[in-house]
Image (tube, rainbow over all chains, first blue to last red; front, side):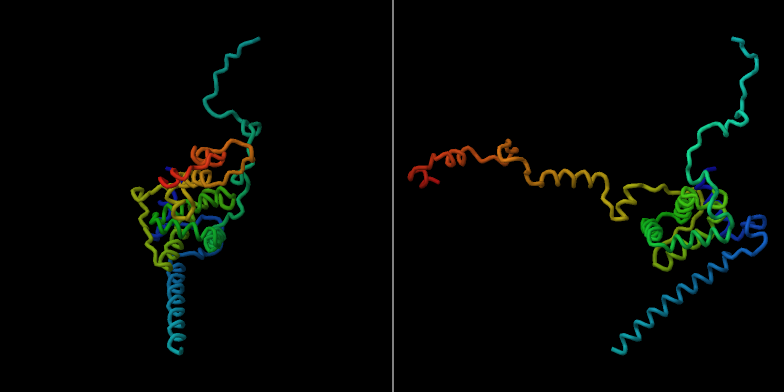
Length: 64
Length: 187
């Protein structure tokens, strides 16, 4: 197995929610910050930000 | 000289690593980040940086699978001595997910297939073209054109280059052999 294959396997497991990080350094004591839920929230926030920017531009256009 | 009857070792000789010359590559030293959350934060911060961001955008534009983009990004981090190789593999999932978010945010397609069949190698010509850099062939042609267009900077008494010398008729006129009135009429 080469590095590319290992990366794809790891990413596939993480995206399927099957990556076990219990014994990973820096995770054992604390919680995993970058969970799938974290990225779902981040995605929602980024899309919301974009939409709010579009509506702001539309409001400015209407005032003109 | 006495000949030893000891058999040749089939494995590495103990302590050979202490006497062999080792180059000082970044990945031979301790990695800068060694814990999961810190490593993901570091890679995400780098992806938000202009240079890494441009690279990811270019790779997404040529529709490279996200798994391969993540692999390239992580390998660069290992080569720079930022991450140990095992941690780089562990954080591949969060990095791939973040790249997918970048793609969605910019309205670009994100191929999230993580199977071996989806693997695509980076073609240098493809990447150069996408980054707006001249390809080798294009650069060669441009160099040749530049040589052709370049003005003659040789001295006054040097031999004129081919195509620059005046035609034999012009040379005759320059030497004072002016055409007669009859010849002018025919011209």
